[in-house]
View 1 (cartoon, rainbow, N blue to C red):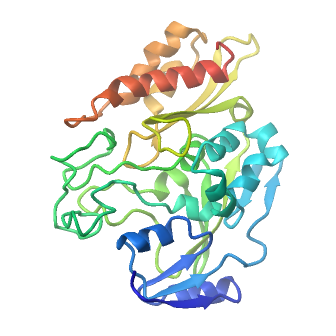
View 2 (cartoon, rainbow, N blue to C red):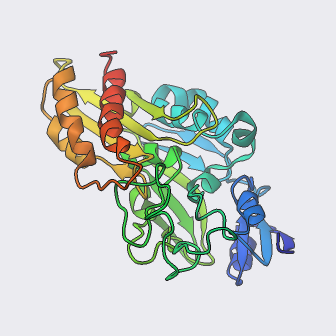
Length: 330
């Protein structure tokens, strides 16, 4: 690990100014950053500790929106009674992530900033060719072992899958990232993450000197009837082979779909909104056949590599199962 300077920010303004210096990273829970520093992927010259800053850990649930501070711990949000009642998909996505020890340390803002678990990305000494680490060097995963890589949103420069859970739920419900820089701005979580294209090293819509201060989730009827399903190789402390965050609202007859929200994880280079499935379901009867037929659209435009073709079959099944669970069919 490269030697680094440790700085403790006095407030948000000080933190932003310090982060504007070259080779500087924020340190909150540190559960992702320190790991990448040990791998040799991240080599900052200085860390700015923001974990103690006041006013960034609140959880507020109102009639129109939910606001969660960037420094709120994953474990605290997951067990918040108002989140459990009004946004179960957020709670489920959080407690299915990582391990209890990590959830107790990790912040919401840090979770949004986590980087891919691609083996080739995380081992620079063994695999120097990685466009995400070293633009223009190539992508070792393209012709390597790519079972855990993306089938949606990939490019010839990068097929690394987005690893998180919470962001999948946030994308499904049009959540926004709250960013403080020279001015405050909001970005939809879906737009916060960038497709790799020719520059997979540019992962987020966040500039030097800017800082995530929270997230906001609009409160809609489908959020209360929501569910997060995560399919993985083992039952805990594992990343998704495919996951789905869903929510559904019915018409007054209790069986016609009025609104539906669907996003997927484990299959895309970013959290992937399944709008094709949503469009196929609006106005339809909530039956297993209708759901499974629509779920096939979840892999529209997908491209499998040598080892990850199973995701083309798995993803529609995960979407269908999540919807049937949220809607009470299973």
